[in-house]
Image 1 (cartoon, one colour):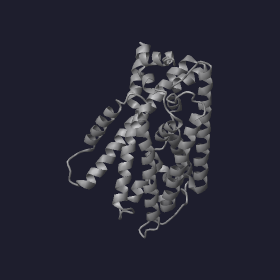
Image 2 (tube, rainbow, N blue to C red):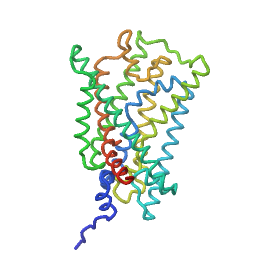
Image 3 (spheres, one colour):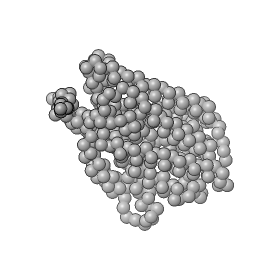
Image 4 (tube, one colour):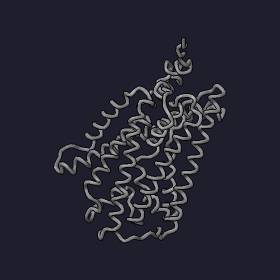
Length: 342
């Protein structure tokens, strides 16, 4: 007769003592679940800024920086996955960045240094997702009811309530279906924007295609650094230790497949959005390509239905991004940290 599976003492202790670990630890995921989580963490509405990135770098340097950053981050995540595997085989399982950093760097203060940085990033992403989602709602409301009385702060409050409800999902693994939808949404609004940019590029109302850089050397340098920082911020959001902790053992090799899945989506969405947007608008590319498609002065360069559907997809994906960060659960970890410092 088969013996009942014994609970993992490590998981039991973590769940009893650490609310953040209880959220992360449900090690039942497969490699494609890791791909869903990673894609939601990295591929978001920030890809709509990539034509603006190319505006500051030009065709050659834009392609080079985007490609180099992709290879560097993929290799970094790959190495991090291998380090996590090595530590787990040695009996030291790490499920968050701060624990891994303290082990690798061998310094007690590194744990507290990383927790502040990670909490600040998570909180910023969570707040940004809520604000942007509220703005998307306001855009749709303004189009439907031009004389409506609802204000932006009311839409932000609505989004916050929805996020609070969704944050009650008990574990990271329970987000896998939401993050699959998020992956499909990122492909959806990317293809919509690419199609709209191609249509705009052939439109008689399109701006002249000028791909020259800033005339001033100092302005070119400033624009280049701004563009490079945007690329770094887009690629640098993968919360790999937390995601790898959700994989069913043995986890070796599964994370690499998840990374390949994620970076396949990155290749399709990042390059298509960057190339089509910059080709259509050149150095007139806005910081958000949707604003280039719907300029303040002049006619819209894309059908309203297409832009509206893209905004809806962006709005829905922002809910998933706000959960993956995750702001609400990281606040529990911050409270516990402050309690330890007392």
